[in-house]
Length: 130
Ligand SMILES: [Zn+2]
Image 1 (cartoon, rainbow, N blue to C red):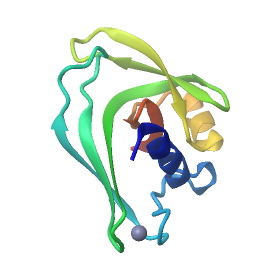
Image 2 (image 1 turned 180 degrees about the horizontal axis):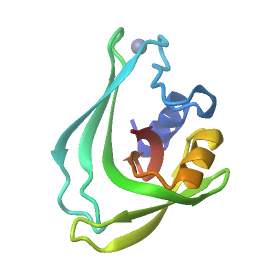
Image 3 (image 1 turned 90 degrees about the horizontal axis):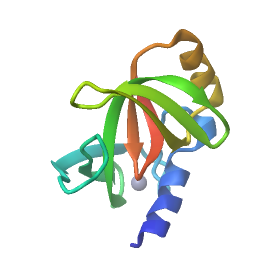
């Protein structure tokens, strides 16, 4: 599968209106994301991991890359979200990513300034943990 196709599938997995659930596009079963080996030859401040997304009920699997950021929501709009966080070396970083998150959740996080973990897949924020 090529990258474009993967992104289309990823977008359908993280449906904006279904909160944090990962739903299989084939059987509507539950998807699990598994981070494997770190990918070391990257330029960003965070280390991406080779990542497998697989369904617990059918044969659906998708290989991609992902990383997590501990940070807070500084600002957001329909398309993108700005996160305030720290790089692994302790430098304060503001970074902007596309997102598929629920606007109500983002509004809440922006207001509270709460530190949570964001999962970024293919440079898109797909899930919040915490
Ligand atoms: Zn499935």
